[in-house]
Amino acid sequence: MKSGKPGSQYFLRLAVNKKPKLLRSALRESGALGRGEGVEWCSALIKGKYKEFRDGAAVQAASLRE
Image (cartoon, rainbow, N blue to C red; front, side, top):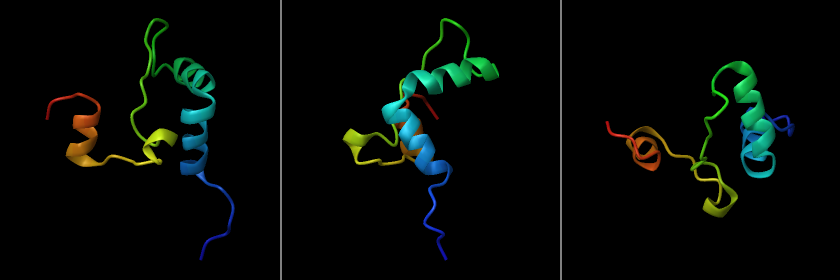
């Protein structure tokens, strides 16, 4: 049964698409990113209809090798 209230997935999509600077700032503050580092989001984007990659597709989308 769904409560109708937005959850973490909703808020992550919102941050990635509408507030990327705020998200980067939070990542830097947490120590996950250094000052000169950045993030290029390739999942859960509006232009990709919020598609989320999993497993090998995620590795490929991030241009990483398995």
